[in-house]
Image (cartoon, rainbow over all chains, first blue to last red; front, top):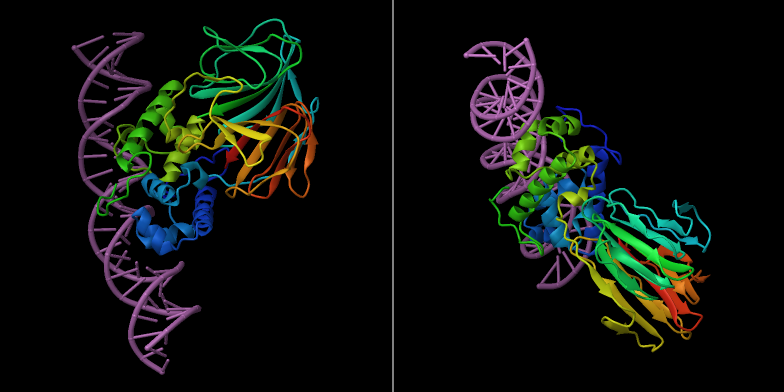
Amino acid sequence: MSDRTARPEGANGSGAELIGQIAASIRRERERSGVSMTELARRAGIAKSTLSQLESGAGNPSVETLWALGVALNVPFSRLVDPPRPTVKVLRAGEGPVTHSEQANYAATVLSSCPPNARRDIYRIEAQPGETRASDPHMPGTVEHVMIGSGRALVGPTEAPVELGPGDYISYPGDAPHVFRALAADTLAVIVMEHI
Amino acid sequence: MSDRTARPEGANGSGAELIGQIAASIRRERERSGVSMTELARRAGIAKSTLSQLESGAGNPSVETLWALGVALNVPFSRLVDPPRPTVKVLRAGEGPVTHSEQANYAATVLSSCPPNARRDIYRIEAQPGETRASDPHMPGTVEHVMIGSGRALVGPTEAPVELGPGDYISYPGDAPHVFRALAADTLAVIVMEHI
DNA sequence: GGGCAGGGTTCGTCAAGGCGAACGGAACGA
DNA sequence: TCGTTCCGTTCGCCTTGACGAACCCTGCCC
């Protein structure tokens, strides 16, 4: 890394931590797939010396180098910069922090908030018939996936919503105006918001 | 890019396409947030000449440079390497390619397959009471999110499954043995498989 | 017009990323 | 014991990414 200039510390880790992450990720993914440095370097078309230095935490690879490694390891690019951390979490119906909108017939619970640099929020929706809930558009590139568990709802882009019943699924751009309107009592749905 | 050595073409785009993507993404995100090159370079702690060259498609930035830009633009790292593409898709209950397991009381439908370099598959599950379905562990780092729409099911790690009802949610590591066993007829669930 | 502040690009310099080759070690068989 | 063949690391060299400064252009105000 060039230390001629001070780099601002990111919200999630400094540059030094970042290359540490990458070093660990590359080694982890390589060993998981059971391939040697020599072989991986050959597949990725990079020098094995480069790979050795990267896995040792030295260096600040170019995106092309990292991309080539991701392709050779057959893992998404983002897996190389973010670490994993799984646990078990149970949320009973009715539990958890509930966000009530202005309309009282709508309640959303965040099932899993979006971890740093990840791309998906999962929401549980319980709604009662009544006013149409028109969401303001989210960030560009956002996609919403909705699945109805029980009840009925009118869901989708504001100009062309779709009536859905239990088991029905729809996905649509989240960065354009869209609606969610329950048509039956105790309508239950899952919404996955995807930030591409 | 060094062209001393031939790089293998990735499954989704060559290195040249990659830097074109990055160039377009940086410019798009910068203009979306309404900030000048000078200001963005200052925030990210990089030279504005560097930024200029990156946006013009020249160069092969280091991950630290790209990281600093992501932080300064306040967008996830992955947004800078993948382009967006949203559409509307509706899948009615009972429609779609259905994967039946060996046990006839279990049917899974892929609602949204995992796009290249993305990290989540969404499945709809309709299950009938009967045999416990024990899934073989998936890739390390995988996490499963399950929400019950209707019915009841015993879900979670094999050594400690949890009984869930409508609206209940659980998440657990997908790289360890885990089960899904319906306890009521026509149990409906959503499973989001997350590949960190 | 002339100064000036803000954009973005181009230029020359320097450190460092990436390279091949050489090197040390461990496992294996003749 | 020696040679072979893998492994991963270390060593110089060369290319190039990133830098600051100079530069051009446009819009604005006096």
